[in-house]
Length: 480
Image (cartoon, rainbow, N blue to C red):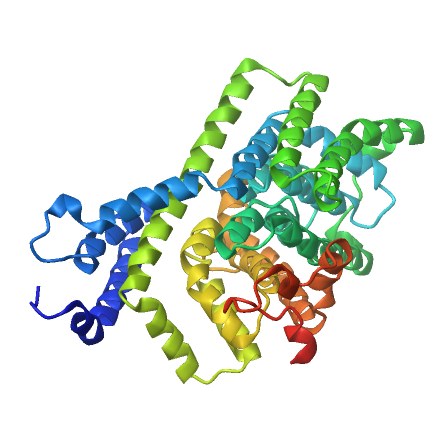
């Protein structure tokens, strides 16, 4: 180490060391190293350099204390308590074997609607994705249940594949979304406000999907032939099927979400009640067994541990990166570009879209979104609006080739005759719908702001210290 003063060393070289740190991390990602542990290793390794002082024992380096403190802070974060609870609720419902009942009941109940089987598949995907929030599980299960039924009925392969892949991704936007909880913890914003802000964009996107299916089925009925077996049920039988399969799950989800939005329960409390409701639902459907409970607990623990390790690694990495001057370098670079707020949003959303190909949403939210968050006050952008735009945007990454993960999830369970290029082609119309919804959110910001304003009348400025530099302008889209 150059025996200069610490101040001189920062000015001379530390920002470039921070860039080296970031560059090596990206290289290791593409080599396939575990991301959470790579971040920990990079943070610890460069932290020994950043916090080095002469004549200090190696085990007295402050990076060790920083790593310990970050680990404790993450594990002690109250916001994250709801993540394992919502995951557990989703896994319990997933293993309750209600998906096939739900799909069949919706087919029968919607048999008079054009493209009824595709509409039933999309509604089932939306409801199940909302309950679980796990994209891969929803797409895989619906690929096993709905896709063969649609192909057997003579449905167009592209349309059938697109419906399942698009519907399965809605869970990352529609509450109670795990993504929104993770973003809220990362951006230090209210989970409840994030949920309220996501409702209109989420259900608008689902409605546009339904509208697209119905219009295509009306214009070209050969794409969606009506299955004959659904007419074997009487009107009374179809009503009973819907009441048994659709209503209980819908009531459970609406109860959880409503209790949060109306202030009757915190997200953690509502998630705990959702777990109880999911267990009761599994018992009622006679699908509750010790083996399924054990599997649900294991999968919940594994996924929760992954999220927590990502938070620990990200916190350590970001602390060292910021201490070395990396954040100031990024900030100065963005300011030098002299972007308008809209240009900054377009650039940041494009970068997040590209990152969505090789990375999971959790890694993007925890690792890369914090790079943009300090820049939001400079452009007067509300972090809640920014988070909803990311949630909508990331769905395009799940559907857009060549790295559309939903397409690969479906291909893994689809018949061998269904080619990957066919699935990609089926995804593209829904990608265009997502981009249209994203544009609508830009043009009509009330889609995001209306419900938070109705449920929570206090503005962001009233909740924060006026001298706090992190104060943002929630009315950015109204004034710019």
